[in-house]
Length: 583
Image 1: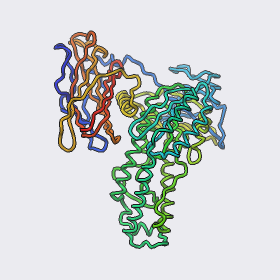
Image 2 (image 1 turned 180 degrees about the vertical axis):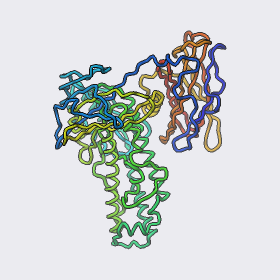
Image 3 (image 1 turned 135 degrees about the horizontal axis):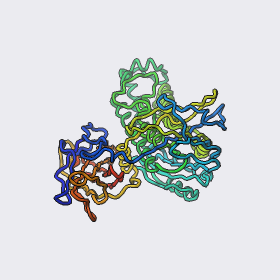
Image 4 (image 1 turned 90 degrees about the vertical axis):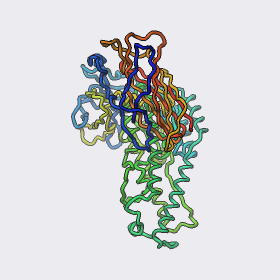
């Protein structure tokens, strides 16, 4: 990403706004374009001429909470103490500072270390559970969505007085808030019934899958020229006749890339929803109603396990789902992934398919279904939840409630470096025969990454939690070559609302500008972090603003844009949302 301001308009001659001057234009590069250079100076260091100790005065004590389920022969194990658990972070044993056993939603024993910075729930207290329901409308067919949501409505009576639920829906572009946190079962039921009236897009995906599969069989016919009606051909023979068996064809790669982009966008959108609901009390649960998110797009497109091929840039394994699992672990959410399609199937034209081809289609259908189930299992296992597959969709909420009411709550305070490092978590019980389920990692998030996450959340979730208003505007676009346009962006910095530190010349404030962009097809840009220094001889008075100008290079399509301004000294975030029409 490249950035350099055009001439700025300060509030008065004794004030000035500065930013990196080695580069010229902020280029917002969508994910499917080539990335360029990030600006220097966005490393979170103290401003020049300011004592570093000023930035170290705030003490940020954070605790990682782990919900741990212990079972023996399928039954929950009760009555364990902190001494029965071994907690390892990156292979090193950590002391357990907070310990609570929760049974049927009530804390039955609670222990806090004498020197701990917080407190665990007291024995006898009700422990609330917050259920965030995420409805995938992008991959799901209407009948599957309706059956699953109606099952959820029928089980809302299981909410306890201390519990709450919120509902969001993802339409392929953005996340819509259908219901904020509520304990009112009737109101939530009304919201979910209205959700059934919203359009879903799974039939379009089903048509694409059927077209792709029909074309795949046609290619096999043309390449081998040996298929005859009623003939069965073994997999090794078929692959030996297929010159593309060792690599992906152009059509396979294009379809895999499309599935990968859509799945990753859905996962990022679910992560944005989590960030929008990051601070509820008690246990936090994401009920993910999924229309089918594969664990690996390339293997979904080529489900033959005997076939080996090069990915060449396609994500492998769980990488598509990383944005969601890492955010869930960061915020302490357990994911309960519900398989809305249940037992799935695809078809081709039975009148023209050979016996082999019909058998192959059934095998392909099952392998793709398994690939989607692997994705849901991966989401659940990495966050300490469960995958509810096949016939579990209509009783999903009762299963989630049963699994989230009895567990152990372990808390510890790691040495935070705020360097965006992922740390492995392993919990085990000293006693033999006990099976332990807990999340597998946590992310040591930097402050800069946290603000970028909030900005991206505003882009996808249509809102920025706890953000102050900001004024920004685009000017007339100027056409550039290769389908691009350059757009002037003006940001009004509310200098009377930012925090200043004294310097030898007067006062200074350190800010960070971010511009998040998504186009009409859901393609996103990496978010650049641009440090801005505002210097003045005296403190601002009244409603003063400083006008900051730059230019943004975009394609000519329609874009949704979120502009945020972060005050590094106070932690305040100012944000606004803009729409840029297609040119």
